[in-house]
Length: 115
Image 1 (cartoon, rainbow, N blue to C red):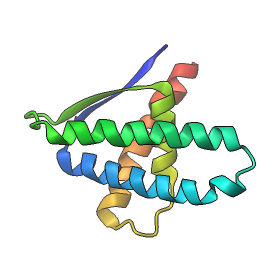
Image 2: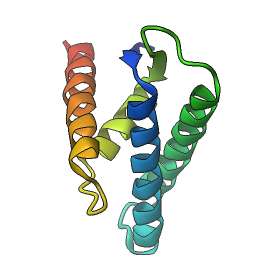
Image 3: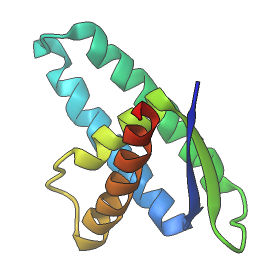
Image 4: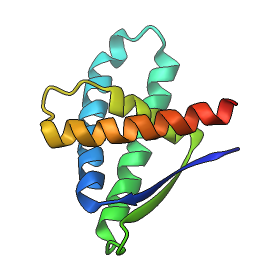
């Protein structure tokens, strides 16, 4: 199985992504009861929680000079991409820019696996 890697992720970007994952989870939990595809919703929630926890453990470690290096399984990268596409009304300009940056990067890497 191929992996997706993020390089030079700053602690501010990591915190932003972690907060966006949390907001995504809250919204997904609300719509879980009305979801047509119940199993996909459960899988997405499970993976997003693991991502949140992974980011939390990274944040608690000292940041390297060049930022954090994070490796994701394809399923984790796909869920993080869903988080980046999530239209969060609580997001400010910085948060939207961080999500846009990683949305483009993740999309490119995931599509590159298909070729």
